[in-house]
Amino acid sequence: MPLPQVIDFLTPFDPSGYVTISGAQLEQLVGGLAPNLSIGLFLITTDIVGVPTVPNATTTTKWQAYGWLRITPQNNGVALYIWNPNGAVDATLLQWQVANIGSIPNGTITGSMIAGLTITDANMFSVSWSKIIPGGSGPSVGGVLTGNMPNPGFVNSSVGQAAIAALSVTGAASAGVTTATMAIQANSINDSNIQLQGIAAASIKLGTIVGGDGVTTGQIALETIDIRNLKGSGTASQMQIVDPADLTQMNWITPPLLLVSSGALETPIATSKFMPLTVNSAGTGYAYKPHDVISQYIEGNSANFATATTLVAGTLPTTANTVLATNFGAAGTITYTVVSASSHLMIEADISLGNTTATDGCHLALFQGATLIGHSTLYPAQNCTPQGVTTRLTAYIASPGAGNITFFIYIAAITGGSAQINIEAHQASTFRITEIL
Image 1 (cartoon, rainbow, N blue to C red):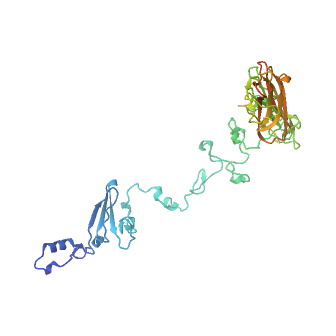
Image 2: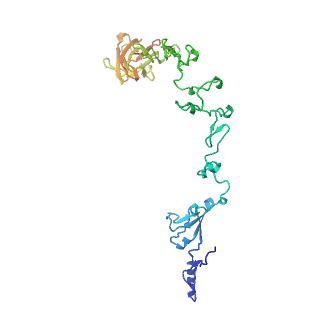
Image 3: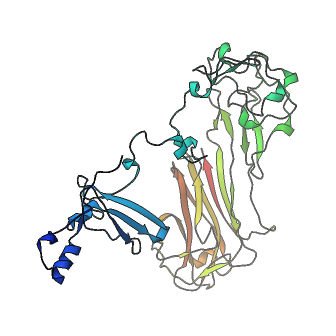
């Protein structure tokens, strides 16, 4: 149906009422032309670095009847906009709206308007079985399958081994599952169905293998595990002890040991732990045996150490006025780790001490941290010069608590000379910590 006859343009004034028209009037006539309400024109702009040049149809109202072609060189595109006087005002595009899907009336897109092979799963909301296969809920199945698609089942004894993918069949998901719902029939797997191979430890549930302890339900036969099946503790010089009354109770121990380097006392440090154990009253484990040695630190040293620091006789030594004998421990610090917080520590130091000056003597001090716990002063009359004499210091600590304890050995001269540990080449000194439960 053709459009009705209309005047295409509206003029700013009627030129037919003028005998003559001036150039200004002619320019006003041409410049003031606007399309009729049923007629439109196009505005064409090109984006500058992605920024659109938006025609302001609010100021120039005749543009509201125009279409706007926006050219976007950055993506070789072009977009068509239409002015919507009732639309929301955008900060950039004003009331120009792109001619998109909202401009397409409902029911106007036909099959021939859709490109071939362009509809994918992501474009489809849902398709009923009745649209795929007649029958609504899905077709019935037969042969080795039973039921209806899309959730068929298998007929009993219908699937052979060749049709089952590896690791695709599982058993009952949890305890209490009835036989009717199990994927594998109970008690249906026998030796002939299992290939000869080992079972990974991760596949065995913890606590499911018990030892043969005289009970008929034991899963490990009595006297069937020999030493070749036992794994060591992984610690050097350890041995295993077994309770003869209960073969399931075992532990690894380190036997008493004094480490000596190359047969000479050259500042070795050794910690030897004794583990005299007894079965607890419940019979479920072991505990240390009371009144026995449970750990021991022993250090022997034959290296010489000397200092000219002096401390007047009768004055108690402190960590500030004596000199650390760096022969012992690590950088002069002897660190001991307590095994039992309720134990008792016996500290014994046998130090060969002397002074190079025959008319002078020496101080020997034993500290626990910054606390003086043992002190002895040797005078010239005690033959500490010049060959030296072995001096013994002992201390006792009850309930030392858990963690590390540090000990230090300090020496100083009385008035002069050089106080020395192991002043002669054949001399040696020792330090011992014994922990008793």
